[in-house]
Length: 75
Image 1 (spheres, rainbow, N blue to C red):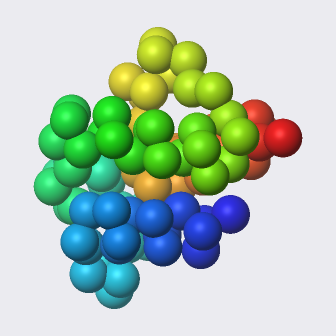
Image 2 (cartoon, one colour):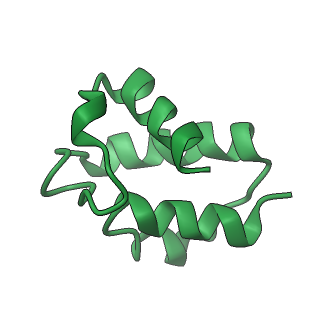
Image 3 (cartoon, one colour):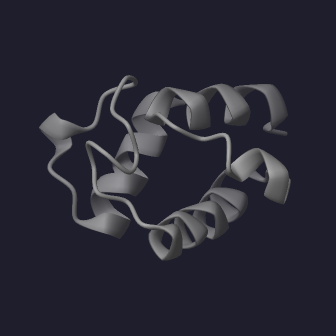
């Protein structure tokens, strides 16, 4: 799951693959802004068949948080 999400982050947001780890903070370490996070959510919904709850999106601090959410909710 992490590798799939990492690939999306690298491709969609033009991030350096070496910078993306489970402990990377989306905003502080990777520079993901709210618009990019919204785009990421849409891509993940399509890729993983998951519908994100808007309240949960605000809880995503690290890449690992997103991975955990996907693992719990993926179909």
